[in-house]
Image (cartoon, rainbow, N blue to C red; front, side, top):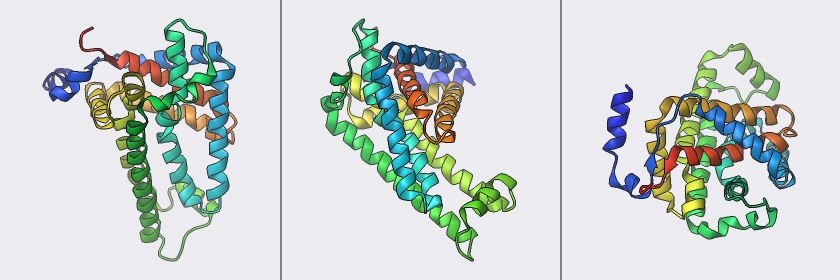
Length: 265
């Protein structure tokens, strides 16, 4: 299996190889990225937690506006989580400052996205469109499987936990998994790559797909750790996002550094 993946990566389009060489990492590499992300949080302290507070505020905002429409709240929260790589660009800047031996400063990171704003905007548009389609697909699942009307929030949670309506649970999870997997695959290293090297959005997303193809098992572990970190934040009413979101953001930078290297290195 590994031999087939190596062959696939070696025969990847020149577009991938022009910008970066995709490394093959170990299954437990994501744990190292999280460990390094935690160290960055401890080092940057206030600057990192500033972004953590921003994540928490965004979570509260989504819950406030979509709280009544819980079927949209879940999708919105999923889209919010998947847009994390874009929202966390300031955290990448802080990690890069540390990597260069510089003192972490918050102010320069607040406008770091301007360096490649057009391509970051394209990526944001892609994620936004996927999020809208995901929301529509979720509503279709509800409409098809609840022909007597939308269930109450408590009934919905009961359906998920008790598996009483197995068709609904399976359909809802499959729809979510498809959209989540797609966005994750195109964003693993895309935003750090656009930020750090100024690459175009399309190439960055294709390189991310190449990373996933070369490291499928490690990416499953990485995705699970990200879900765990964000899930802890959600489970605490977004309060823990003040800490877990910066860790995830810093860890994403270290994932990017570990998964890609310059072609001439």
